[in-house]
Image (cartoon, rainbow, N blue to C red; front, side, top):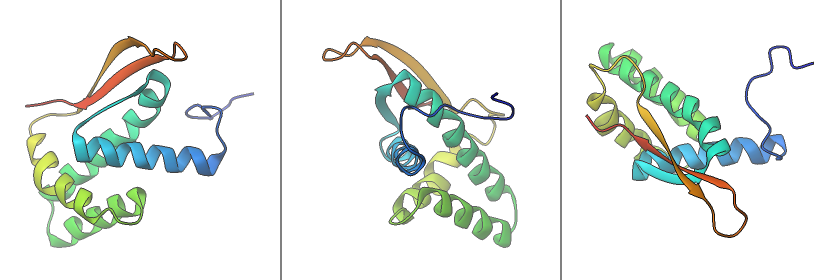
Length: 127
């Protein structure tokens, strides 16, 4: 039974799946657009939107809220993510201050040449 089970396993073990999600969310914030399979894009989309919401809400608060928000995002993204956290809080989150949600867009691009996997383009909405 799948009671209260969220997300899909993507045929990976837990550690590999978590590191793959972190890496792809990091790349999404760095390049603002990534191409991956539809299943992986659908699995990382809620994580990216949650981190943008944390950054956006932290910018509205006082200094303690901003430091707490930066620490929460850095804890999720892992080691060597200081530049990405800075970009998220300084460039990406202020763009979405008037937007209530839906910060990413998923565009299906067709099958991949080698194994016919359905590919998608996951990008940040420009505003």
